[in-house]
Amino acid sequence: MTEVMLKLILRDYRKFNMHAVRQLARTFNTSKTAMAYRLVEMVKGPCILAAYRKSGCVWHISSKSIGHQWWPQRVLDPQSNAYSILFNGFRDDATMSDLDADTWFDVPRADRIEIGEQSFRVHDDLIIAPLVASSERMLAD
Image (cartoon, rainbow, N blue to C red; front, side):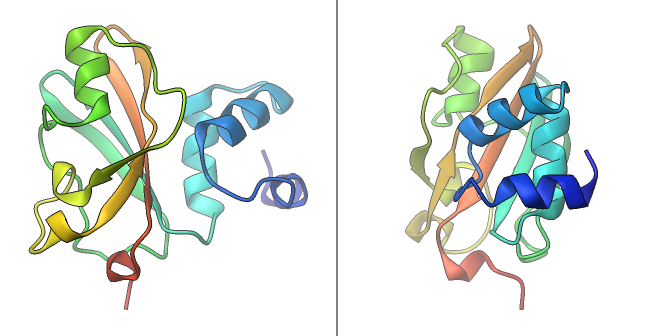
């Protein structure tokens, strides 16, 4: 998944979402998690990838355009799709859902910002949550 090869293919995708992740994972014969991680490293758009177990956040990565104060909360909020998938056995998100950012972040006035979420299960006790920022307030200075 070299950057040069991905940049050429990425021109066909306008947004970071699971459709792009699934298609590119198939093309490069890799996991959705690995592809999503690589895309967050590369894309210019503001996005975050967070991995959670029932016990809490395992790891996360943010694109370079996300401000340093936007760290995902330690435990999943019951209002998040990721919580419903991990704890209640819901299916993976078929589309990007818009949620208040305070569902994911403990930052002042996050309840006034929308964020996109499209989570998927990796196995019984691990969920990956791709998050896409739609507000310039989340951008790095």
